[in-house]
Image (cartoon, rainbow, N blue to C red; front, side, top):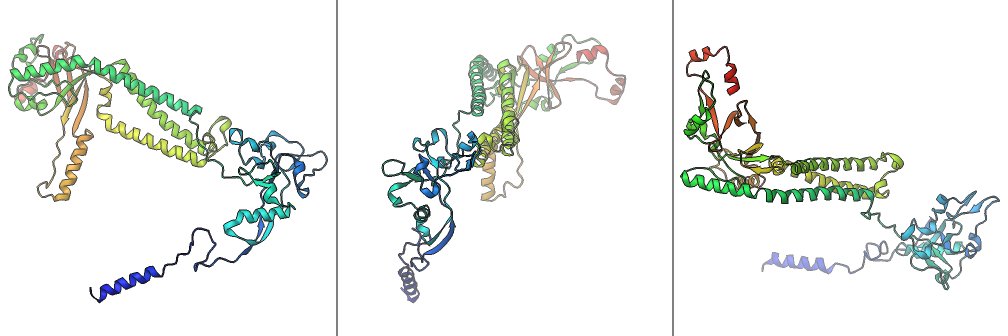
Length: 480
């Protein structure tokens, strides 16, 4: 060990050796920075607590009340023409408590006259309460007060104790009992919504069992008869029926075709017919009254949460109508802290609800519909994967790759790696069932119960296009 090491050890030892063991912080302002006890100091104009008794005759002579004619000494410690209920409720010996919060020993206490402010010659900041009691007792000519005078909530009147100092402890923090009317209403509304969603989920699970089984069987059969087919079942067991380009459907789709109309057929072009073959899955859905009520209830409940925040805001400024008008924080027992805490908690819950609805938005509505085969539904949901193109992926460093991996997993977990498009099922005047997806009409083949693009031959030359300048015939319009 060199000289520098020894010097560091010596400095460390000297630092710890110079630390004092004086208790500087156990008694506030009792010792100075050097550990010496502070000198006593004088404190003037000290306010005395009220002296409380059960009978005004027990008050010291100097504190016994004496009111002018036609006035009475009331529980607030002052003389009034009439002791009203509001005045009686201001009894300083009750320490701002009432009802069950007021100790039974304090219910019959009444105050004596106010003791004038006193000056304490030797005031100990670390023992201020005792100094104030002694000075105030001397001002009121109370002898041997250590035996005859107690302290509120510590020593009650009885035995040798004839009075108590109204040194009120800190008032209990206001809080809800959670049986208030507005809380009961909150429980009822949200509980009813939760029950409704639970009932719908159970019903939906049972009602869709046969559809899911049929979808599995049909998909398995299609794969067995058509090797290489890309049909699969959607992520949450939704049915998946993709477009087909079988040639046999061309003739079936042209039934009832007017003789003077241009030919129409299922499209057989590989690029065009493959629109639904690149991982796009179809699921059928139909409305149900219970599901519709559930989804509307979610919207109404969300609005009620926002309205509740508005009510709390109005209460903060004392703007609630009725008897609460002009009373700040009336819903929180006039406690601004309790009201603000309530607002923050409810705001957080409302924020979580809104974020959840935003995340679930692509497939929330269809959850409250019943799953069917696409050919039997009122709606068709097309689920298409979204593929991101990352520039300079090969040149990314470790941090960039980690961020890309995390973002990709987050997108997948939140369902943002797919595009959900719900299309209503429509019918032509000829009764053909179809839906429109990405500017393409997909027509239901009654024979195969599958949707496929349908095209009409409008010509391959300008001359044929010019021949149709006058528009389509009525029969063709009805057919299309």
